[in-house]
Length: 445
Image (cartoon, rainbow, N blue to C red; front, side, top):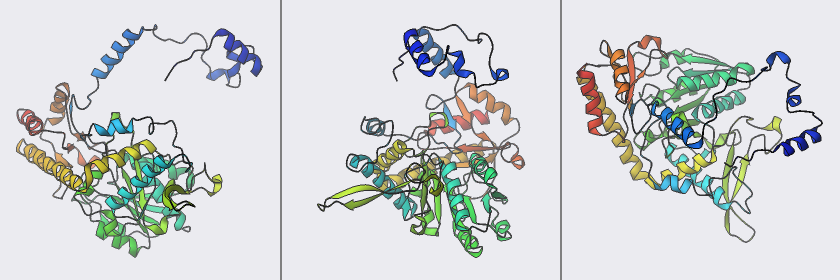
């Protein structure tokens, strides 16, 4: 982005137009006690090459992939991105400041969104998909808000404690000013959601679980569906690792009413936690309840096929008070990137890639068990898993960071009962040597 500074003459002309004597007068509405008096304590300016050297030095302090080996997971995953994906997504036709929707000039953009919706519904086994949302946490919250709108007399939802902790924080942020309540479903001894606890709950608008859950364990979605139906509540499920559905039975086949997910694994770089891609898809009966945008395929007056914005239940297109959501953000370029990735990998490639992820995670788990770790749970998992660490591992983990290895996420801050437990992840980007080297480092103490 170009930086165009204003000249003193430009500033004087603008102040004259606004009726202010100086730049400081622009801030006169801010109370005096909140203003900074005097000069700010800032470092001296740097030349361009000095600034570049400074930024490079700062980057070296970060433990980032691929220079470092990050065995973390927990909602953000390192995956191989085919070189054609960033090339195509970076073309000027796609990388625009805003996504246009006028069908007479935006057929390419609209078709890209339509293809994304189509592939997401095929992957997840649902009927309609929006395009798209900020991240999984906001998409999941929107799904729960749909349930509360449908069940008008209820103000409570049941959410698994094994849904990503950050996503539960987002839900609480949305719910607090609206007077809604999120009841957390406890964790069972096997690392999955305690569904017996849900069976004892009453007056809930929805039951929401994440699968694979935050600990990597695969939930019993069939049983969740049965319990939700018995409570006349909506069955909502979420996920953070989309590649899992290349191998696992998809949530739509279990009868999920609404599915929220994170699409970062579909060709989007980690970039220190962002950007993400919120996926929100559902059964067709909820099509008019979904926030965001839906693109449809139609024919014009000449009978030629085209694409149009069929539904857009958000505040910028209809009256604000009638909008399904006033907060949902559309990560359009990320949705298009995901569509490019899914089309490139294909159905067969998705399955093969998912199998590789699963197999590498199993290999890493076996290596760490041989190195002195203990299994935390005896449940099927996808590409991440929890283990109990040997004595003194916390110190060893800090030493490994200095060697460029970030070995697992401590779970104690999220789940106090899991003291000295760590969450590990392995994807296709890790070699056998990477995983054996980690186990060797741990074993040597």
